[in-house]
Every structure is written in structure tokens, then in C-alpha cells.
Amino acid sequence: MRILQVSTYDQGGGAESIAWRLSEHYRRRGHDSAMVVGEKVGDDPHVIPLSQASAHHESHSSIARFSRTLSSYEGRLRGIWRMRRWLEAYVAHPDNWWETCLGRDHFNFPETWRLLELSPADPDILHCHNLHGGWLSRGGYFDLRALPELCRTIPTIITLHDTWMLSGHCAYTLGCERWKTGCGHCPDLSIYPAISRDGTAENWQRKRDIYAACRLYVSTPSRWLLHQVEHSILAPAIIQGRVIPNGVDLSHFCPGSQRAARTARGLPQDAAILLFVANQAKSNMFKDYRTVERCAITTAARYQHRKVLLLVLGEQGEPLVFENGEVQFVAFEKDANILAQYYQAADVYVHAAKSDTFPNTVLEALACGLPVVATAVDGIPEQIEESRSGYLVQAGDADTMASRVIQLLSSEGLRTSMGTTAADIASRSFGIQRQVQAYLDWYAQILDSSQLAGRSAHAC
Image 1 (cartoon, rainbow, N blue to C red):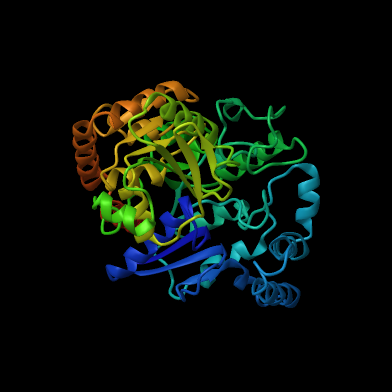
Image 2 (image 1 turned 120 degrees about the vertical axis):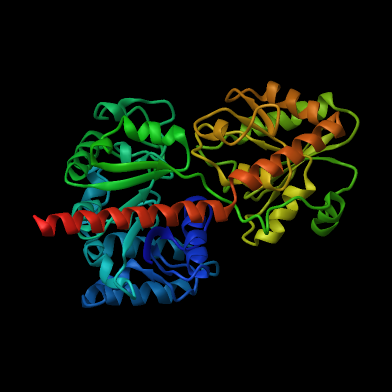
């Protein structure tokens, strides 16, 4: 098959890593797989930046060349990152400045209409992932108004990784249900992607009108998110919806020697180590770092057998020291083998969130044979089998989370048994090969049904 995926970036965590892994595995299985991205980070020739569709337009081409020149100075000169995104979002697309003033989502990316021309070969199927974000805190890269034309031209799948397509602006609604009835009078404009003025009602209506002209296949990684979709403005556009859980690469994320992992990462052998993985954990509004921190402090106060060390991976900062323990921050780690060592080195994985669709980090912990204690929000309960692979607690309940952690720390037998079950569940249900095969099977069914429909229409 010839598969074209669309994603915000080619590298990163969460949704970006999922799209990238799928594309990589499709090629390994002999399929012609390419990706179009809002911004290209790596150097893979199978990844094409969407901006290339505007190469024929001299002003856009000049801006793109200047932006690429500036990219070599990122990390060396302060402000280069913001300058590049300002150039790409506003200078290349000046209408977006006015959209921002009105609190409207950015749809002014005319290169989207030439998306299919970027594929090295005419694709059989178009698979879109996140269609928001990428250049500024609430910028974009994709003109949603192109969806009706795209899905008339080629069978189109959209995998939702959050609820942005259902709402007037936010990626997660955090308990608000105004997205069901039209948004407007938004209670929190600061939720990512933030807007400075309440244009949520108009954004919601624009999306509803676009979807009314679409016929799409929609997948989600969790039943929770598909249920949201089925009660949203996207529902009338759906030909078929499926739940296809995210997968992890079991060749990297698997059980290993705790002692060897701690030695490799320079961690103390005699500490009780808790792990929390989240990009920009302390400032991420959808995670709940404060609950994890309080859990660690409470655990250290009650559990006096060993020093308690909480590792927060994906954040930087000075260690936080408290009685019988501390929090250490570790920068974001791209190397899967090193990341797996952190999971293998830990005793318990703790994950607190205010909203989370189906976090990869929980799956990675399970695959490494690490029992998980997490908050029971959104799709997380679909990942953890209560009292078998971990424990679920109410959101914000640091005391109960600490009690469950202490229960696991106090019994090596329980930790070992639960970790073995966790790894077995991950191997059976959450491997990347299972996810890849599920999508390939679905692609084939979609193409078969499309060809059958085409033959029927021709016969008529």
C-alpha cells in the first residue's frame, strides 16, 4: 500500500512519536510510507514539510529558506525559536495575525490544499494525526477547510489524540461540557492551545460546518475518547469509528535487571525509586506534578525503610530535598534504550494527570514490568488492570496514591507479581506490532470497500 500520514512533527513525544513509529514500521513491512509534517525536525527523506507545497510562491519560499537558516542558530542565540515561529505563522500567513486577534483557530495554510502533491507516489490512503499546534503556543499548520476536498479525493482516516477537533479551542476540556452544545463564554481561555479572546463559539461552528461536508474514518486510542467523539460535532462525518490502542516497541521497552539499569544511569542501589515521565512536567497543565510530588513526600515520611527518590523525567531544575527523600529532575530523553533503563531502574511508576487520553508512558512502564499507580482519568483506566498491573486512585488524591506506593514498596513479592502481570498484559495488548497490524488491516478493508463502491457506481 501507499500510505501518506500527516502530523505536526516527525519527532517528539505523544502523538508525534506514534505517527513516526507507524510510518517507520510500515516501511519495514514493505509499504510505501511517507509523512507530511507541519515542521520537519529530523533528516529522514520520507518526511516532507508541508511548507514545500508553497515552494512555487516566491515570498513563501524566501521565508522558508530564511527560517531554515535561522534553525541552525536555535539553542545558541536566545529568541531564535520564537522568531522562526513568528515568521512561519504570521509573516508567511499574515491573515493569521487577524485570526489571533479575534480568538479564532488558524486555518490559513493554503499549502494544505496541495498536500497530496507532496507524496512521492499517489497515496492509496491518507492518515491524519493531530491537525493543530506546531509553530506557536496556539499556532497551526493545517487548513481544516481542506478536509472535505481531501476525503472526496482519497479515503481519509483521522486519529484523534486529544479533543481539539471537538471543541472551540482546547486540546482537553478538563470536565467542561460546553463542547457538546456550542462552546462560547469559555471558562478558561488559557487551556492549550490558548487564545486571548473568546472566539470559541465561532471556532466550534466553523468546525461543525466543515465536518458536515466530510466523510471520514476516525480512530482513537481509547474507548473514552471514541465515546466523546460519538457525542460531538464530528459524529455525523464518521463512516466508521474504531478504537486502536497505542503500541510500544517491546524490543526496547521490556523487563530488565534493576541493578544493571541503576548502575547504567548512576542511580543509588539502596533507594526506593519512583518514576514520573512527562514533558515539562511541572508546567504541563494536563499532567498533575503537584500530586506526584506530594505523593513522594508523604511516602518518604511514612516509609522509613529506604530513602525515597522521585525521578521526574522530562523536566529540568534543582533537586527538591525533603525528610527521607528528594525529587530529581532529568531532561527529556529521546533515546528509547536509555529511557527504558529509567523504567527498569524504578520500583513503581506514578502517573498523575488532570486529563490524559492514553499515555504512552504508562504503556512503557507496564512493558518494562513496572507496577503503575495512576489517577483514574479519561483513558488511563483502560490501560491498567486494577490490583493486577497497578492501582487507580482519584485525581488529586496524593494520600491514597502514597498508600498504594507504600503497599508496593513494602512487599517485594507483590511488586514482582504485579510487574510480571504488567509486562504480560503489555506484550499481549500494547505492542507496536499489534497497533501496526490493526491499522494495516483497517486500511485494506477501507480500500476494498472503496473499490467495491466505485465498481457499483460505475455499473449504475
